[in-house]
Image 1: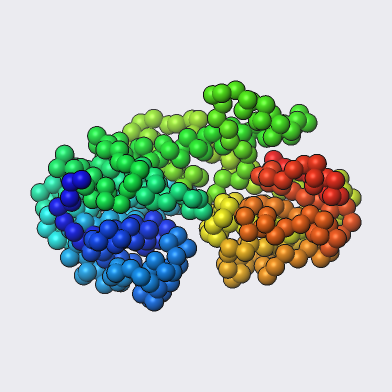
Image 2: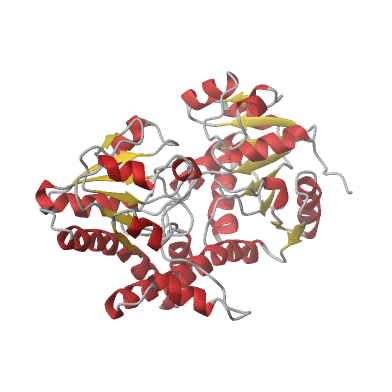
Length: 431
């Protein structure tokens, strides 16, 4: 295997992406600097605590990573890998503020001939046309003469069994030499292989396409769920029947939250509109998926009414509040929209999520967090995010004993058996 030209790597941003990367390079014996502007995070990491839950406290404590808030440490790096958030603003336009801030910091402390790699999700052109000039202005160096650039999009999926090493990784560079060097660098930590993209812009577009495809496919089955609701059909039965064909791609309806799938399509739309074309399908898919929290709330209201409940006197227990199963991240969780709509009808919601801190539940959703599974006197259950830790400890019959008469059960993702829930005495609904 070819060896990278340098042996010191600096990760700028130590979240769900940056920390696992830092750990992987450290395991391979490279000198690793972990830089972040968050003093509290760096203090915790230096004390051996993993704030992300992605690699674990032991891996942090046993590493030789140099955690720092001092940007001057960037000067020692042969490779600077930027892994900062790329959200959208209130108008749903890409917010590149974190990238520009990181670019200025890196530029002010960048060594000559170092290579800067962006891993954050962006629309095509950002690495070369936004980050590059920002670094040039701050450093006084010139792209491809004073420093090199590359793009290698992150592909981590929190809460799954797929580790960083097990996922094939795209790499790209501003020259054939940079590409070869980055392939050698990332080849040290990726067992699944690398895909060498022909250009940085190709790699940028590929990243957003990955999540655009998922968003559109989920929108198809979400719209199917809306159709089935009007036609009196069982969505799951329709999908199961269609899945009997060998080339059917199976997706299930649900709430589409998180930092990637709801956001990345908007990056591609923005980049496309800048180039003179306004996408249609991508935006329509987003519209469908953004409607699903309201539809879930309407499904819940209908179930409560049909069970003879007085809406303004009703109380529900929401199980699982994170944006996806088996993670504790509440940011961009679409269940908040469901809770807000229900509150407009006077319905009280309590929340239980064993993976999320109580204070964050309270701050994120404005509801009381339950320290344990407790359904006493509630009018129903909304199984929003089916964490394994919830399903393993949940008992339909035991919960029914605590609930008020004629309870409802809203199974957002349809993970439970319809007949089993109905036979246990619940009015059962799912998307």
